[in-house]
Length: 441
Image 1 (cartoon, rainbow, N blue to C red):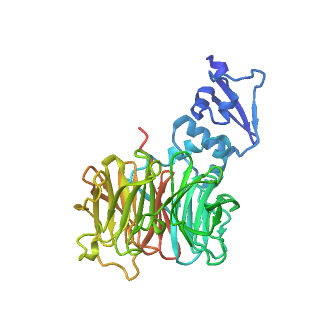
Image 2: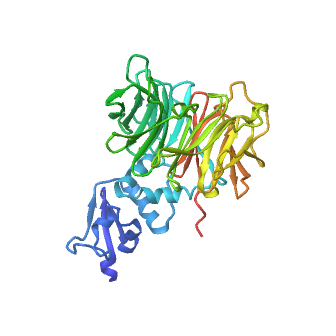
Image 3: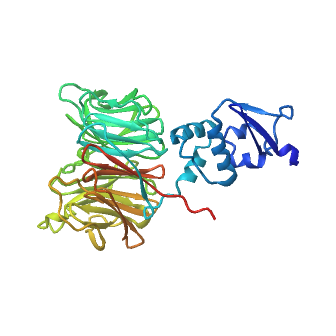
């Protein structure tokens, strides 16, 4: 590549910039600059001495410097949101994110911002989006935020209580709600995350009739499947399966006698074993029910009940559960400070309560938020009161703790898009935790 041919001249909003094709190649093929060059990063046309771009020159200067140095230096006078919009135009969002935030590490997270809620109390759930945004459910409302933490038009479910919400992709979310007796308007719907438009409803059919149902916990599996616990008026209690591309029901697992699949609090798809974890937790039921369902064989391949043994010890009653396929175990947490582990290969096995995986000592608040669990990139997270604890290693030893007392206890948290979102119980305040980038050497 010749030196003269390598040089590129831009006129951005009336301001002249000169750089090289080598620098622009750092932007990648999916960028605006990638479209200007051939496969060898030579300009596709030699007749143009200058390329005019009608965009903000100050932001262009910052982004060009990012391509040169891999460092992001934003002037104090520049709006970050403006820079993000310009980065979106040039196809450089991933570069900005990589420079601003390092790879996710629970032991290095720092509080980047706090967002005040749009309605008081009653926080139901917070879910991280695949691109770093999130959605917050409370009551019959779902507030959606993009990765710049700008709120989109809220989704109003017309006084139907939201049970769960999940991201299909960066443009679509699924919401499960309660069926109102006699109205037949419950179930699930797929909504646009940008404008709140209802795209289609998921229906449950039984004996060629569409049934009213309450949709509960959600999970997303392989082959674009959506799973939801379903509680109907007759004969359709269990777990339903839908195709997220078409919204059509593809399967249904009816609950066996004595179980509570339709009231499940937690669903989790296990990609390695192609099974679905279904957990009905205390206090919805006096004893916790955890099972693994194989939809191909239409059978329950593993099940654990009454795992709070000994039953005379109330603090052993389980509030959340999460499968960890790499270690062949299911982690559970009770309402106080204990983490326990169940061997996923041993049906009916007891809980091994870990003395090394302790949460936080202290008095429970008057209105406690039940602890939640999450697993991300080999690290285990558990909320307790106003803190989130991080556990690492084969013995899941406590290694760090995230805490910010403002906003009350943490009622839910979620990890995605290199961020951890923590929803507090008071005023729906949520925190955003990010990992700072590694130092440039």
